Length: 237
Image 1 (cartoon, rainbow, N blue to C red):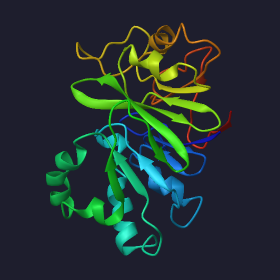
Image 2: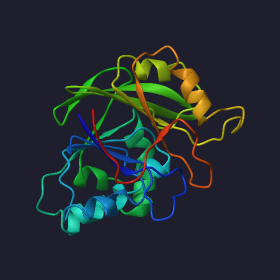
Image 3: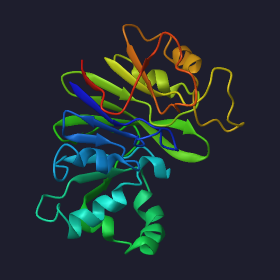
Image 4: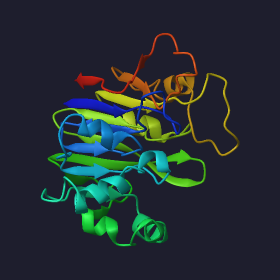
């Protein structure tokens, strides 16, 4: 399985970087944060991905769907097939007033083939099988993804400490996990992010697992002994 990191920044972009975006097998984009579309356009005039799956509705994970929509309807993507767009349960209704303010409430339906996934119910997309597992991220509904092809990729999305991380990582070949915080860091009683030590603890009983940390600010020191994602990183596993 091939993975390309398009964007690996936290909620604020690292210098020259893009927010969350991870391209699997060149066909499936996991999250589409600010800066991701421009990075994809460095590779081709307009992205030809078959599908996009969004973990949750914080803007740094879906914000570039808006310019993507404009380019699909009125720009270089106008003549291309509409990619599938998979959103968390209830998202279409939640996004309607937001989209109405930005343009029209149906603009995603005009630019994408929109569906909503269900928790722990596998769905087939772009020749792969994806399962969304609920994770803890403040008070917002959020998910991590297990992507199954010839191999299994686990992607945490944004998550605080949760038993779901071990569920995501079980029997996976690669875990891409957020690690926004310093070890010993704290982001409030309703946790929403992880430190490197908390990632290690969460998957301590998952054997033979390769872990790559992402969603990490450059202002925080690189934790020793960990692989870090960066924009443009390409992996085959």
